[in-house]
Image 1 (cartoon, rainbow, N blue to C red):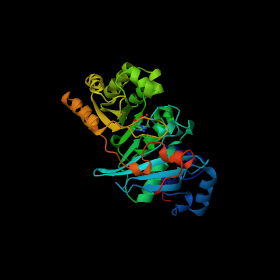
Image 2: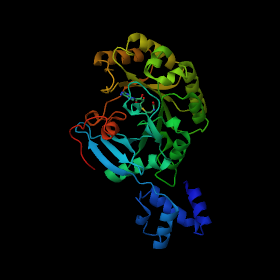
Image 3: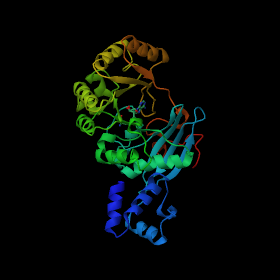
Image 4: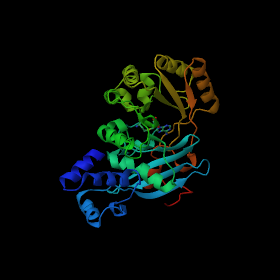
Length: 346
Ligand code: SAH
């Protein structure tokens, strides 16, 4: 609930409106785990709240910490027993959390581990928020950036995503700046357009991964629904509506999308747009035989973009030793993969 909704609901139950503000602050600023922690409320009110409302509090099942870069991967259990994963990354400019938006995914991208077991259900706004809150409680450090790039397709869970963003960036709550929130999509065109019309200041990242429809269809089933031309139109619209530069994600897969010709074709797509390209060496998953482009190819690809005056950075890999990539830890947990070494319990 938003603050206004909570105040209204409490009012209808005969409580004073300022109680709404108190409870909201306990939830979203002090990051209380339950009503029991809200010590400036009467015992009666706390008990009433417990009977009136469902309080989402994720159970931390596992925390894995990278020995390489301090990245932490969290496995959380939801109240129905489903599990989701989130990642905490420390950068010089602040702490970033990557959250999941669904249990599983139905988009079927060929290189992604999150989709291998299919889609289970959407996450509620509170379940997205509590990934960030639980991590903040665990690390004791403020989160400054949130990326919705974990398991799931956020634009396939649109209403919950929007409510989540509004709560996350609300001045009465954790108050993370909209500019520090990134939503990544595989490219559901009508939803990208709808998001543009919300006029939020968040960053939209498009998982492009291929410069032609033909190649993209091999990697991403969604490419059979929407063409690259339609995607580029939607990106242009997003920029026009919000003034926010689009990010293209481009995972380099050895022998698939990493040639100089691919870089030229990508240039042609990127040129008319105000965008930035993130080059990501694909993270190989054992169920598929995709391999990373070798370092020379990656550099040559980036050089080509640079020469063509396109902004492109190679994304630094983090948490490689802890199943950092989408969906790997959850799959291990639900029994599809054997346990790895170095797994710590929460
Ligand atoms: N469904 C959304 C967000 C989740 S995936 C989307 O498709 O954008 C976040 C990013 O990681 C996407 O760009 C996705 O294509 C990419 N990704 C997934 N698995 C990967 C892997 N094994 N290697 C590299 N990138 C991967």
